[in-house]
Image (cartoon, rainbow, N blue to C red; front, side, top):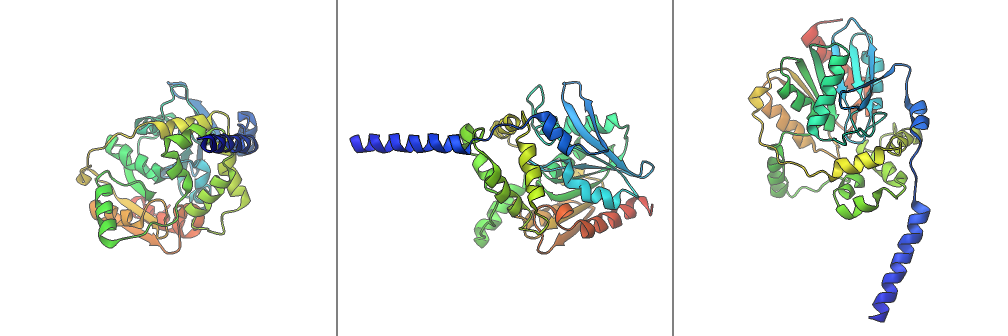
Length: 330
C-alpha cells in the first residue's frame, strides 16, 4: 500500500508540474480580433445579445451564396472561394457561436437550433430572401437542417464533406462491420473532447500540438497547411471566452434525431467530398447522392476534409459550373 501511495503522489506531482509547463492562458479578444478581422468584416448583435462576425463580399448584384464553416473552424476557411467566385456571386460567410470572432455568446447556447437561428439572423440582417446555402462538415449539417426548416429560402445546397443525415450512422456502422474497414487517422481533438475527464482539464492545456495534428489530419497533410494556417486555428481557439464556449458545446448531450425523409429536399444539391477525408467518410457522400433526388456528386482523389482550401481552384470551378446550371452565366 505504501508503494502505491508513493506512486500516486509521484504521478500527481508529475501531472501538476506538466500542468504548470503546458498551461496556456487565453488571448485577449482585442488582440485576436485585430489580427483576424478583414477589410470586409462586419459585426451585428442578435436579439439574444450574441455579437456575430460576418462578411458580405463579392458581386452585390449577383446571386447570393451563404457559406457555413465546420466545427472549430471559422469563416476564414471560405476565403479562397470568395476570391475565385466573388466576381460572379455575392458571398456571405459568418462565424457561428463558439467559433472565430463570434466566440462565446451570452445565453451559452451552442446547439443545432442556435446555429440555425444564427444563419437566419445573418441572412435577414443582410436582406436575403432566397440564396444558395452551403456548408462544410458541421456547416453541412447546418445547411440541410436549415433547408428543411426554411425551404422557401434555399434555392440550392452545397454539401462539402458534410455531417450526414441521422439515418446514415446506422448504415455506415453496418457497412464498416461487414467489410472490416479500418478508420483513417483522425484529429485526436474530437475523440478526446468526447471524454469527460479530458474536458475537465482541457482548459488548462496548451492546445498547440493537438491543433497541429488535427489540422494536418483534416487537410490530409496537404502542402497548404502552413504554420500560419495552424496559428489561425490555434489563436482563434484561445480567444478569450472561446475555450469555455467550445467545452460547453462538447459537454452538451447530443439528442437523438429521428430519420429525415429525404424526399423533403426539393432543391438541387452539389455533394463534394475529399476521398481521403479522415473525419467524415467518403461513404457518406455516396449515401447523400443516393438519398437526394437532385444531387450531383463530385469526389476528389487525394483530398481530405477541406476541399475549398486544399484544392480551391478545382473545387470552385465545380461550384461555378453547378451554380451556372441554376442561375445561368453571370
